[in-house]
Length: 271
Ligand SMILES: C[S@@+](CC[C@H](N)C(=O)[O-])C[C@H]1O[C@@H](n2cnc3c(N)ncnc32)[C@H](O)[C@@H]1O
Image (tube, rainbow, N blue to C red; front, side, top):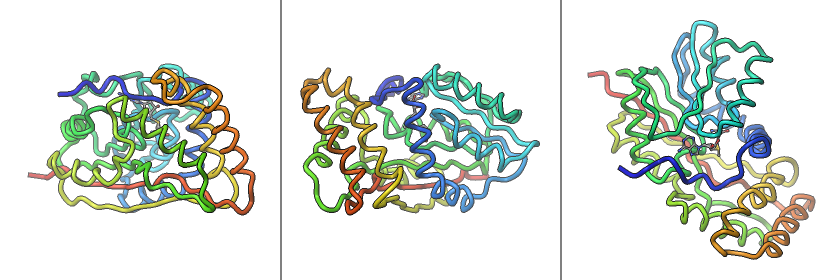
């Protein structure tokens, strides 16, 4: 089995948490429709695998209600500390957070539903992670993943800076041993792990204005350290791409998308 303890290339901590908050606001409508299609039963016990700042844990908490439980795990201790402070401030007593690294987490707990967003793309061995999820679910339990196909971005009119950003991001993720285009692989990963009744849906937020355009320059800035460490671009070039992405976000006639996002869900056989 490959080690799943490394691979995350984007800046974490407090800055990373604010980027995730922005991303969560952009994809909230499509995540909510996914959870609605899957059907999260009141009273159920859920795990958010690689929960980041816990934004989806909050949605799950509302769906499972006071009789249910949500556990969010993530390896970023600073992000989990922020999530825990926000949980306490909002008195969400059915959520718990744990600092844990996928692949090293010894849990034997049986969950009704495991959810993961934008996590498998960062893992060197996503098949092992999906198989771990299978072992953590009770018979009939559901797994739900949504993840990116970074090659599926689009922009109009075309932009060299945007293409360079996609190329640099994809390269650092590959160099970390992970897969920036994992989205289309998700259904096969579920089927190979023994899930049945596997469904697929594809979504892609895009717009001429607003936060959907403001995420790109942040992401480019937050992969600066591995880009420099691998010698893929100079600091000056990174600054230039960040500035150009920021300028594109302000241009009212430029249409920018997020990566294509593949959503998939399946069930552990009852027998
Ligand atoms: C792109 S963020 C997504 C966070 C959250 N699921 C969301 O959609 O807002 C990926 C998260 O996975 C976490 N992560 C990456 N590799 C991990 C690993 N091996 N074990 C646990 N967490 C990991 C990172 O710390 C980060 O918070």
